[in-house]
Image (cartoon, rainbow, N blue to C red; front, side):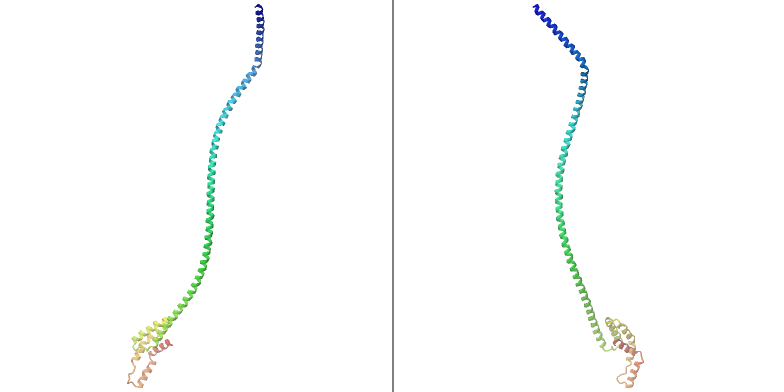
Length: 246
């Protein structure tokens, strides 16, 4: 037992010595590595802070990314809607373009028809103008013919009046020559003044005529009466009539 106790006592000493050596070694190592450990701890602390900041930044960036993705989705939807609207608008514009082309074709067709109609109207107007000119010429001829007929009728009536016997009384003579003047001026206005030369001598002529000898008068009385005619104003009545009828 004593031997065993000695053995355990020797081993205990060895172990104790080893432990002391180890502790001394650890202490020496600790003292040697303490500054480096503290430096590493400081770096670790800074790294942890940087990691925390980076995590916050990552969180912020993730939030911003989420917002950007949401905005991207919204813009994509808007772009899709705009593309649909644009496609629809382009289709409508294409339809309108086709309608305008058709309208332009119709307009050109109508324009061609109007041009043809205008040409036809121009030709018709030219024909109408020619017809109007012919009508005007014919009307002028008709007017001249009617005027000539009217003049012939007037001359015929005037000739009938001039073939009548001279009126028996001065009142009838005045009425007769006034009628002759009306008719003759329609035939030729220059005849009016010739009638005016007759009228002033009506009284003188019928005064002389009132002196006509009766049936029982002698040749000398008749000769004197006729002789008196040539030396009285009554002769101017007959001379004026002669100038008018010449």
